[in-house]
Every structure is written in C-alpha cells, then in structure tokens.
Figure 1: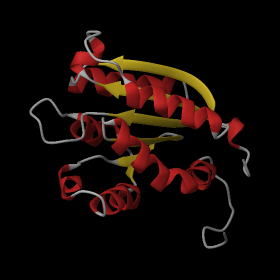
Figure 2 (figure 1 turned 45 degrees about the vertical axis):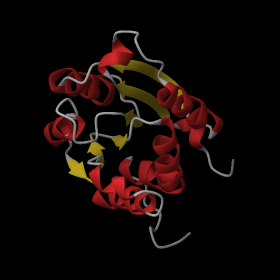
Figure 3 (figure 1 turned 90 degrees about the vertical axis):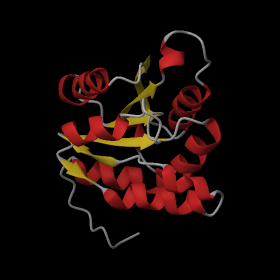
Length: 169
C-alpha cells in the first residue's frame, strides 16, 4: 500500500431483499469489506438491507451524517428491475454528484459486456462522505471497484478540504 488509507473509515451496504431475509449469501459485500480492508481503509460498518428506498436513504444518512464514515460503498439495486431503487435513493441524499466515477465504471464494464448499459449506479458526496454504488454481482462489483480504487484516496482528501493539486500524480 502506497498511501495512508487507514485514516479513512469505510462502510459497506448491500441492497438485497433476499440477502436481508437470509435467503442469499452476500458475496459482493464480503468481498468489498475484505478488499477495502486490504487497501488499508478502517472498517466501520457492514449491513445487508432490503431494496427499499426509504431504508436506503435512512442508512446512508446515518452513515454519512451521524457516524461520519468517510467512504460508503454500496452493492446492489443499481439495475432496471422494479425493486432496484438505489439510484433514486442517491438522488435524495447526495449533495454533489461525481458523474465521472460512475461513467468510468460503466465504460470499463462495457468492454466486458453490453449489459453494463443497464447499470444506473451513481457516485457522490454527502457531507464529508464519498458514496459509491456498485453492481450487486461479485464479478461486477470487483471489476467496478478496481476502476475507481486508484482515485478514492485523492477524492477523500479533497472532500476533507485537502489542497493538493488534482493535476499532479
């Protein structure tokens, strides 16, 4: 690890009706928890919640506003099924959207499958929290996280008021 990620806490929220009822194993949420810990981020919270817009809004607000989690990564609920409402919840809670992150994830996924066009995940800021939506499948969550992982430390630094130049790598 080349950066100081341990100063940043993270949470993983999985949106899944079946997962919340204990009918499906949450492989993507478990992977995200393990991967972000390996990157040096400090684990703070993991939860599987149903695909319910108000529940998603309430959990995201709690994690960002009350618990002050720096990085909130969600998995699931970003597609076009009737129960996929994560983007609609994000519309209600984001203060600043970061469309480039979602666009980069979709662009990279399109190189693998045309179905990536159906992903409606978002990324953005609430308070001093960065929130990133990933697809629900383990494969897609892994591939999408790898796309944004290199810019997350700089994004978190800037969100916290850091003054480093964005053009310097």
